[in-house]
Amino acid sequence: MIPFSPPRIDERLINEVADALRSGWITTGPRTKKFEQKLTAYAGHGATLCVSSCSAGLELMLRWFGVGEGDEVVVPAYTYAATANVIVHTGARPVFVDCSKDDFNLSVEAVEKAITPNTKAIIPVDVGGWPCDYDELNQLVERPAIKKQFHPSNEIQQKLERIFVLSDAAHSLGAKYKGKKTGNLTDCTVYSFHAVKNLTTAEGGAVCLNLPQPFSNEEVYQELNIKALHGQSKDALAKFKVGSWKYDVVEAGYKYNMTDVQAAMGLVELERYDNDMLVKRKHIFDTYSRAFSKFEWAETPSYENEIKTSSHHAYMLRIKGINENARDRIMQEIFKSGISVNVHFLPLPMMSFYKNMGYQINDYPNTYARYANEISLPVFYDLSDEQIQMVVEALRDAVEKVG
Image 1 (spheres, rainbow, N blue to C red):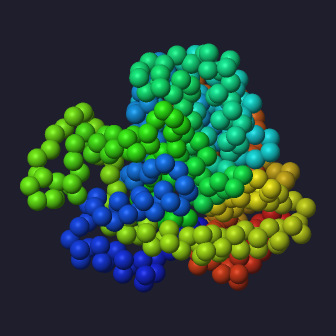
Image 2 (image 1 turned 45 degrees about the vertical axis):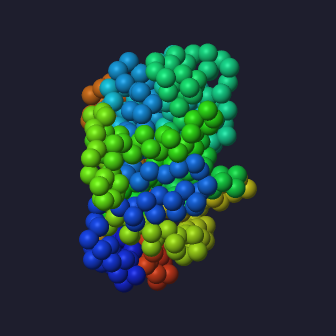
């Protein structure tokens, strides 16, 4: 059996978690604060808040910006449900856009057409770890004609004076765009540290603040700390200081904090991320691409060019000349070989909840075309070259059998 994406669990990670447990400090504490600082230094943005999940971080930032009833948020049709679900939670309406003809990411041209006077935010998604066209998105929201449509409804929106760009970088920690890492590419970026991600804390995420002047990213960080912990004016670490038990609750906040047990994992993983984890994942991508280059039916994913470098999260192979049904039959044949494969993603307009809201996949032809023949292959740290060859052979045999 070759699994799809198990986490990397070794003695170094186990020992660090054990040390956190022995310290007696297992909720938000010194390790979480250190992890935040290390993440800020890693990508070079303004400040980082660690949270319980990427979804929590996205929703926290939408609510911070004041997104709510009557508002619209532009989001790709090609993404995981969490990206749109958080919009629904705020009472706003997700506005789906098609993906680009060149990759799995949203089309900036489609985003421009989707903007209305109700648009408050755009959530680009770095699918598979491949960065979106951030310069184009950032320039789009600054265009005078686009800014003229923006109608602020609170002080924060008045301060920004334009649509908020909130990047879903669940897949793309460590990816680069024009020499900069994700986290430092637009107003705000949110990572995921879920169990299947390149860097895992079992569950968890991080909000990377990169807001322009006149915002102070450090002040917004302090504000978000309060929002992420039930509106409490002091977290457990601050209250632990002698004589500092007293606190206030200044708003009805949320329970979105990361724990030190989680942060212990993150600190180990981040330290060896660029020079170990990303090196191994690139090797896996390169090995797959060399092998599949021999087959006319294989369309390998883009993961490096003159302006972009992927985080090598998901190897999203496309099979030329097949439909969705044939793709599914090919996958079944691969499963019979004891190899786990996946699809990134079932487009949101094809899911019952969003279909029932009136969205139709026919309105997103590029999205459907890319979904219908895509198969994501196993990528994880302990995947051996021998196992990679087994995956290649199983896929080749399945394609030939299905025809």
